[in-house]
Image (tube, rainbow, N blue to C red):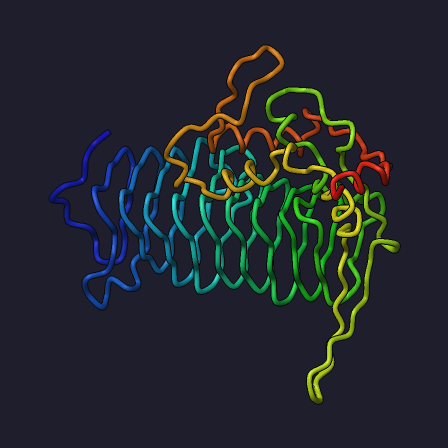
Length: 324
């Protein structure tokens, strides 16, 4: 890999291929605010990046600092290899990646006017006006002021004016929120993983008998609330299994290790040390790392890891016994 040291960039165009950039790529003159950065592949940028437009044609790529674009950040649909952003990525306009062949990782939050992601792993949250997700895993929340279009994805939660959902949607947290009714494409299923034994599944062990996924009913699990403040009135719909979670929480959910796993995932590139989540059935320590967590959730999404259905049954004596 060639190191960029004393190299003179074109004021309006930077192209990187087989390069290591030691430091940020930031404008120093007014005309550099309109600069386009094109990454052709096999590059590492050790600092922050500011560009009018950032185009990524191919991996491998690692950007270790924060990224901001005035117009857009675009990843070529035919891109392959690993593309990772270690800190926040933002754009005044759009962030777009429809690449299905690349290993796309966002280790922090995403903020833009419009966000379109295919086959991406996001350890933080996404904030935008309009969001489109397909075959994605978002550990945090998906928050849109206008609309969310989500297909076959795992998300922590979501909140938007309108939501269109198709195929299988998985929630990591008990509740999600919309203003209008969710537009579910026929055949769509909504699952909640709040009571799944993610720790045991990650270790390859047998799931706890009290654990499992909850298939949510679009009508039964919808709660409509009207909020009022002076002359302002707003209706919010929540899709929640919080009642089931509160009942189960009185049993002992800590043994599922879900919180530990999700917190580790949300740390992204800041997870500098390798921890163990426990031992597997062979008494071997199971390390927890960002890459392993990413693969774990995509295995759930793609059906390689199957999660049992929660039984929904518990003994009231098990609960009252905790207070004796």
